Image (tube, rainbow, N blue to C red; front, top):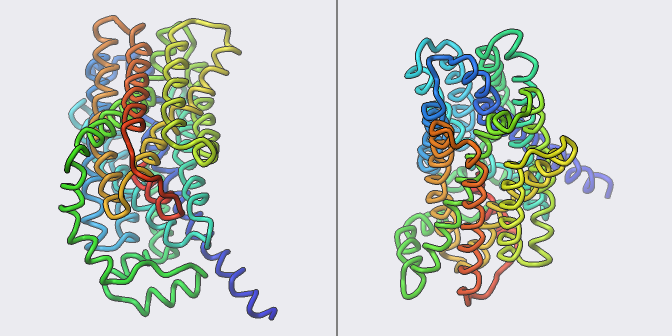
Length: 445
């Protein structure tokens, strides 16, 4: 009996090793994503590369456009080379791209570096989520994925400290050199991270997949035939999203996701700069980034439980309303202690509100169309991620920086309205379970 109990315990430890490696990869992903916003106030103050607010907004959009490309191509590339190799390649790509930024002698070269970094960043997150879904201990898939998502915000916290400690005394390049160091982590991933079970099954390497599943004490994914059938039916699943009256529902989800990611990436890019425009010192503005991402970690851990109790559509609509209120309040100069509380609460609601859109789409979709519905909702939302940083730059360039928080708050209100109407119109039965909970998070961010 003792030996039968020892294997699952060992398997769980091995599974958590996989989760830990993916968590570190996503941590570096978050660091690289948020570092631009953290150093942006310094770049604007010193007029590096002749940078102006509108050009700064364009640069912010380059990274999110690269993320769009990376996210849309990650699945195809992973199906060819494997999820493990793709994760290693993504870490290497965004690390080396940060080196391009650090060495840049012109705005064009810097923009190229951010675009390349975005491709790596966009490809890593969904691949890492897929990986931990394969290796999460039995019955803990949704919790493990939620834990993984906290790494992205931990990276945002790290980016603020990197900027706070290095930029002023050493120079802005030092922050991007720090973002090159994850390249040292790529060989660690290559050596210790096993291949995705889903990929092995899809390639017909069933015995290898079964051996890994037994070793890590996890369940084997769907069979090869079922995976092929799902791939063949993707087009039909997309068409199903527009059949009958479903097109209205689908467009409402897409619009809600557009506003949500506009808000997420607009605030992530411009929060320190907008807070400086409100009269706060640079050090305080970077502290707000830390507090904001701490709120994001708490929000990711709380949102799922709230959705289980009150329903994902209700939580998403309420979260967006509270986010809009918090973002709008940031345009008002308040005592520091009050502002910190508002920034924290805004981080709690903002970062998980978008995730609840994916949860709503997952729950309200037919099981056969679920992956397509969530994937396309995320994809359409990423156009908002490109638009958000650009919008903030245009407002600042026109000397309407005080309208920045108001514009982002309106985006939150629009998402509240769209997801609320979509939830009211939906008449489909809500299905729950670990698979849907995991799928709804695959497209997050």
